Amino acid sequence: MKQEVFQNSYGVLLLIMLFIIACAKSGDDSIQKYVAKDALLNIEDYQVNFPKTEGYNEFNASCITCHSLRYIEMQPDFPPKTWETIVNKMRKTFGAPIPDTTAAKIVNYLVAVKGKR
Image (spheres, rainbow, N blue to C red):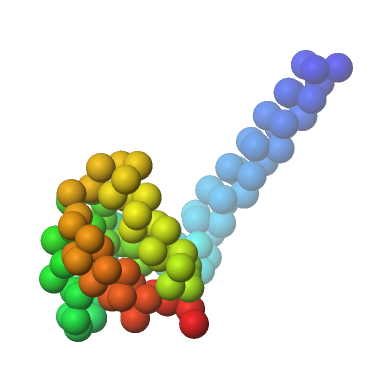
């Protein structure tokens, strides 16, 4: 029984691969454009642009020492209390060297750019 399932899965995978190859060989531009477009994507070229408003310098200096700005950009819009909890977790649990006054500026900045009221 398990061998039959494996053989069936292998057969389906083989059919999918053959279909993709056949479409690519047939001159189907939609697949060729899709492959070419993805081949040109370089994640290092992706630029994150946070607004340079009040608190940006503290945010930028403190947050990128541990993770990328892209990671922060991917976060959902949180209410102020959640951003405060997250910044405190970075300080207390993960040991980020952020003084209280800087932490408050970072929280205010995150609420301004990624906050939900």
